[in-house]
Length: 76
Image 1 (cartoon, rainbow, N blue to C red):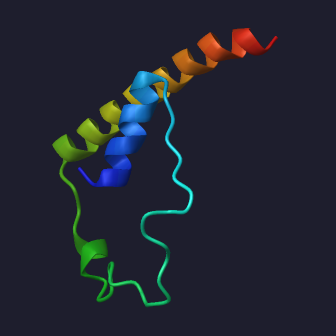
Image 2: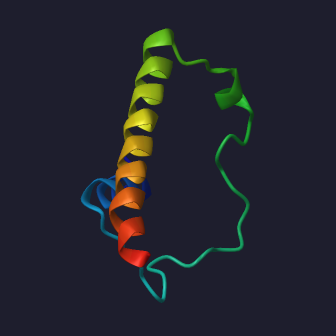
């Protein structure tokens, strides 16, 4: 799991946050290498992979809702 996705997942599950100022890796003025030749767009995930992705996304949404309910009550 990439570091940014791991931190996002950890922060949403633990009701925590993380901020770095200045950033560890500032943006560079170079062209992106991701999907440069378009080959990735031709790949298609199977049914299992799409179902797993939806399941994980649903879990993140429930965690965000729990977080909003817990901390939204503290504001009012």
